[in-house]
Length: 165
Length: 184
Ligand SMILES: [Zn+2]
Image (cartoon, rainbow over all chains, first blue to last red; front, top):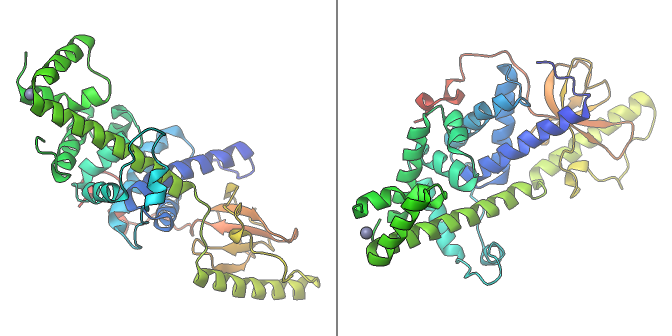
């Protein structure tokens, strides 16, 4: 590693990577403090193993490690409640807003998915990553990722009461 | 023409907009004729929209200013007072002011600079804070660490938020090693 800590561009790119990982971790543990600590731990492991956190080829490793730490951590703290007021602001004008209850049910359903299905779905449908990027992060083939995402969607539809899923 | 099963297998390609025009038209014709598949695809679209809303909610949580817990804040204050006294004694200056607010409490107090520091940094006199907001020590010996440097209210003190101690790689971390095999 050739980090000096003196280069402003380097510092801001580390911060950008950190924020990206925190956004991903929040989607898995739904608690900001846990997410912050998990990402710090991922950085610590990266440092001890000589993984260059700012290198773009390290992102799959960082996402995978963050995901594994989220899985290991489970929930140390209570997830943040999604209240009605906050949920109402998630909808564009003219749209029928979902009730907070249904988003909470969705969140619980995601959590009950098998780990690989959940990770693949979160990366695809919530992080908007490409199948190729997800495959690199999960060390799976693109075909396997597609299968996990598909199974996850079908399982969620079934859990959330779609009669035809 | 396909079976309902085959159409539903194309759910993801449909949601991702990956269906070729011909197949898309074929699917649309089937949905016109098949109420069950129409409900299935409607449900899938609603699910996708709600996943996107959840993502927005999560990103807001991730972007919110960091909260400081009361317990940690108290520990921080005690540590800061001790550190301030130490510094004041050694440098002979009054470094502590009751009016100064801890930088981590300010709305803009999220660490704004991340540095990977060399043995030359942090420098003696810096205040080291660990990831749980405890004031660790005033720097004497420095080791390489991933740290966030924050300006303090007092120009002579730079606060360094350590992401964690750097220890040599050990074999005791298999549970955090990446890869599907480590998933349980
Ligand atoms: Zn059909």
